[in-house]
Length: 570
Ligand code: DGT
Ligand code: CA
Ligand code: CA
Ligand code: ZN
Image (tube, rainbow, N blue to C red):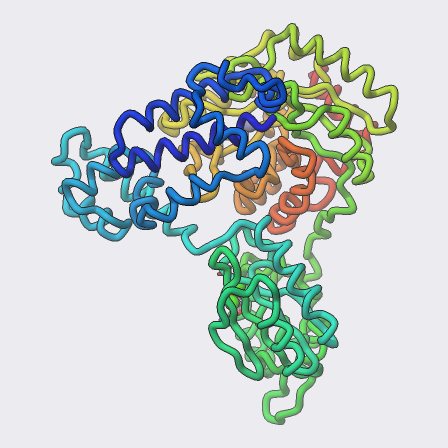
């Protein structure tokens, strides 16, 4: 369904017009957006029939825009609005709880034109004095600014990984060796810039880099390092080194800085000197290792440490003691336990999702459409679940992929579930999730979730903190208690692999694993292409020190079913 995308664009237009102080129009766009997102029929069908204007709130002007979005996937008018709106004001509008109206007011009354000025005014207590703003808001604003700044200038994995791969393909022919390093190689959840390391003919490599089609500006070109700015303001650094120090440079530029500091200190303690050129004996300048990373770690008396663990979180001691985990890999993944079909808010049919699962070599998938309460995502009633079951039966006949008949059921404010227990008991798998009332305090939120666990009906707790990177903070929750309750009630906690969620994050996931909780990595796909996100979830799992046995979707279908049935029978 294109509806979601169209509605989002119309909401954005409304916000930008509101921010500009335009009257009436924002209301019209909001109204159309709201109607469109609650429609059960694909807008594309209305378009085919030529009756888009039958939709309430859609007149000539909005119709034209919908058609442009359907045809091109974009809208020029929106680009134009962005261009004419100061970037700082848009940042202010994005602060949680501010929005376009308040941003406009802050601009009019306090000349707040960017985040810096907003912070100053909040700290000075001047915002609380404005009508419609209170002291509590200032506190929230300051926290919101912190969140935005933490991600500002940082980019999401799914933008960066393909771009880095393209660069490597583009300049790889000119290099003897080439690798991504930095935070990308460590699969960090957000990425500052792309770091590429190569060995070979420096002239040729740098020529290739500056000739890369997505380069917008060459920031600096040298013999050993070239920096460029790519589309979307993304920076990439390419370094060229000698082959015999490639391993040392790879180790150095992979980081993290904290890991490197600790490793270098360990090297000194053992009488060595470690830098980006190699590992050297103490008194002699002789290079004892440098061509490969493995040789560096080995010479220091430890196992090679996977990049995902290099955060100075105990990995060096573990490597010395031979106690590094055998990290879960993409090859271990046998299926995907969270995805949406066009029965709720997914774009594709179950059939299409299954074909994609076949392409990936999966043994099973769970179809987990939303439950009725989530009307905005076209959630299913018990009756619609039954109808969907009919379709599942049909799809099952034409595939070897096992299809788990599932749901992502809403956990309501009081911790009860948005579907009768008799219905849930009849499903193969139940994901529980919080999609509303994010603002409850930690004590209430925690007991709401524990209450839901205690029904015994939930197999997996989806996106446990609800965060959306750069967009929404995690809700307040006592993760310690949630993890204990997950162990007690045998609920698996999800690592949601969607690059804007990555929730649990690696620190919480590690804590969960250490407490004995099981983890499920699910893509939350709303489009068959999203099944691709699995690798980002696996990245988080590896950063969390997880092994395959910690992750339930590495199990065979039979093992998984045994686990799920074991739960149900208590
Ligand atoms: P990012 O780009 O912010 O997502 O994070 P990184 O880790 O990619 O950081 P970046 O691009 O500034 O530098 C790449 C790596 O180079 C970093 O992980 C470790 C190494 N590095 C950079 N500066 C230093 C430094 O001052 N000391 C040490 N030991 N290593 C550094
Ligand atoms: Ca970097
Ligand atoms: Ca860098
Ligand atoms: Zn959800």
